[in-house]
Length: 127
Image (cartoon, rainbow, N blue to C red; front, side):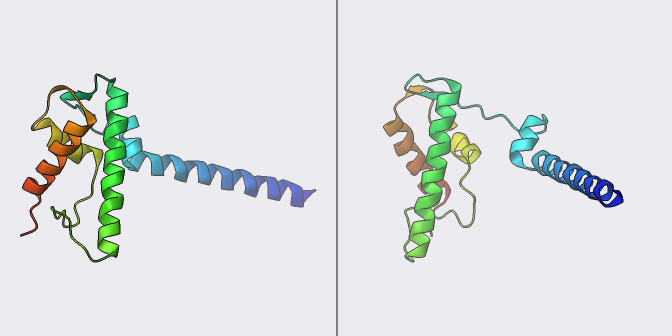
């Protein structure tokens, strides 16, 4: 009987500890910081083909992921691209900041992508 009570108490304490660690991790992560109001809000000056704010950010997020993968693949093959990020992470914030410099209003995905690669080459030259 005592053993059952001790086991239940230990399990309850483990669950509380796990919940506290999870909550703390969320609060200090970029995702959690946005939820807690301490993060930034992306404000693109453009939309992709007239899409919603969310659709535009989904496009940007996918593009950030694709560029990150491209960079990893090039590095694995010991090749270089037309720009050199030098350890700079490819984030949605970076892409929105770069695109906001040249775009506004409704744009096509092709125009956004072309503009982005021009901005990356200009901002992060390899020489």
